[in-house]
Amino acid sequence: MKWCKESTLEKRLRGRKDNNGSKDDMGLEATLEVWEINTFYALSHVLFKVSLRVQKGELVCLLGRNGAGKTTTLRSIIGLTPPRSGNIRFNGRELVGKRPYQIVRMGMGYVPGDRRIFPDLTVRENLEVGRRLRGTAAEWTLERVYELFPSLKKLDKQLGNHLSGGEQQMLAIARSLIGSPELLLLDEPSEGLAPLLVKVLEDQVLKLREEGISILLAEQNVKSALRVSDRGYIIDKGRIFFQGTAKDLRENEEARRHLIV
Amino acid sequence: MGLDAILFQVLTGVGKGMNLFLLASGLSLIYGVLNVVNFAHATFYLIAAYICYTITGLFPNGYWLALILAPIGAALLGGICERLFSRLYDKEHYTQIMLAWGLILVFGDLMKLTWGSEGKMVPTPDVLAGGVPLLGGNFPITYIFVIGVAAAIGIALYVVLYRTKVGIDVRAAAADAEMTSALGVPVDKLYIIVFMVACWLAGVGGVIATLLSPIYLGGDLEIILAAFIIVIIGGMGSILGSLVGSLIYGVVFALGILVLPRFALVFLYILMVLVLIFRPYGLLGRPR
Image 1 (cartoon, rainbow over the protein chains, first blue to last red):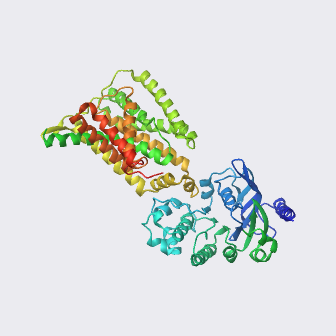
Image 2 (image 1 turned 180 degrees about the vertical axis):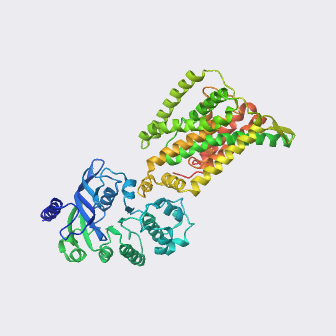
Image 3 (image 1 turned 90 degrees about the vertical axis):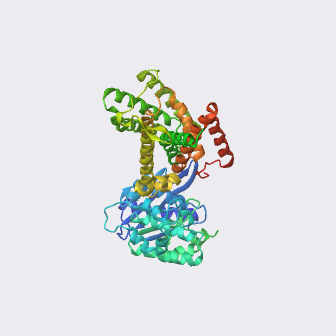
């Protein structure tokens, strides 16, 4: 059953690829197109022919259990763990073989699951690391970022390791936002946050989407992810098993099976 | 022995310490950011000192020219060596020390071929000759100059690290290089810059050291030991720690000479052992 599902998905994706590389059936532009990537950690094969796409302005979630391959997928896209085979296209440009900093400078932002706040740097300095001067019109300035995350402004001079989990998560998002990304890769932003904070976070993610930023959201928290997403993929044991709209994912029995811990 | 004499000696120690600070801060910076133990760091210091000797021999007022050119030479050489070290960034420290040891031997022989094995003296520029009456003695102007140059560079280093984008990136990379690169910072270029700046600092240290003592082959091995004692006391990876360590080193050594000349170095080793026992990561360092 599983294999059957995967192969039809693959066929569909391959069909698209053959027709035209960057537009799908409905003629929408793909911001990100991941095509059959295989990723390894040393000798262990972690991702098996993972394919997915994110259209311009779309919020797509990547759902899966712990260890299913969500983080590795995002790390493959941003270039921290480059895939050994397959293609990743961002606005039509090939990413495989590029360094993480080059990929970021092309307009991608990465927010890791463990936040990775620089502990000895202040909040403002953490943001400074993410700041770049790209002559785009929709550039995110420190002021705009602080507008979206007012609580960070008050913590301006605080050291990174003095922040709470929620504050660190906001800072992690703000830090890649200040680089004015077109596409944001969010890895489990809700992890370890209190339910109330998860709600706040959902609102902020939606605001980012309203700003026109495409988002690929990796989540274990299915409910939260499906509340904000347009579409989603389900990954299990390094393979994509299902894709569909948020509604499909909520209702499909088989989809749910892959998500039960 | 009067209080004046002791204070005078302390000041001399501060001068020597500030000179060593230029070397130790670079050693500490390279370790903190690149996680490389650059055992060859003092070799860049010695090479700059020799270049200074050559330049002062060629031009009548060559010392000032040497102060500009010799550190640049050390930095360029450092940039080349960084490319060698870059292959060992993810390897054990001992492999880096092996490479550094190789560099010490190769550069040592090259220096011997170029400048010969006898010691060299660099003439003190007229402006820096003589001394100022202080605490009942005559404090050499060269020491004041050394303290001034090292202090100015220390402040500049602080400003760059804490007030500029590139400095903040360097500190971020020291904490988490992978995340820094995932925020759009070309970390490998940053590493070259850091290595070159550290070698430039060593070069300035070497040029101003020629005012205080003669240049001789093998001097780099003596001075790298001093630099290691300093960063172990002050804390590997901490710039402020290397300043504190340098001052402690200079002053303890200077006072040691006054009290028990033959055991001046022993006091420092005892101090280092005490730090290693009670605060293994150094006075201002942090556990890694």
